[in-house]
Image (cartoon, rainbow, N blue to C red):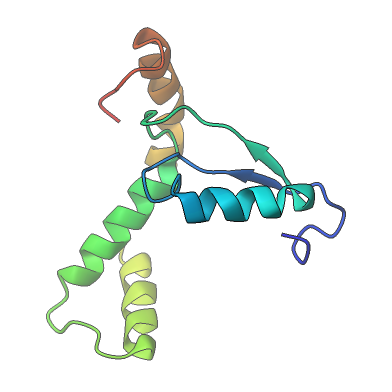
Length: 115
């Protein structure tokens, strides 16, 4: 964090999934708490980040390829090719889904949603 945010304005947010809330992770965060601001997030909160959906779609596209990547360079190539094969407007649809995602979250009062 000090490298990326030398101005000490970096913000860290994690989803409190069990591995992220382990003793080792918690100790590490406390030991470096002066390097960044840590936002506390409710455990098991709904995922509102479209990056997760895009990542999942990209990984699924790579898995469906006829020959799986065998080297790191093969993986990079497969990811780039799969990214370029996304249908036009795919990312725009994800962005435009945000108001509905937040409305669902508000209606569920922060509980589970279909997203």
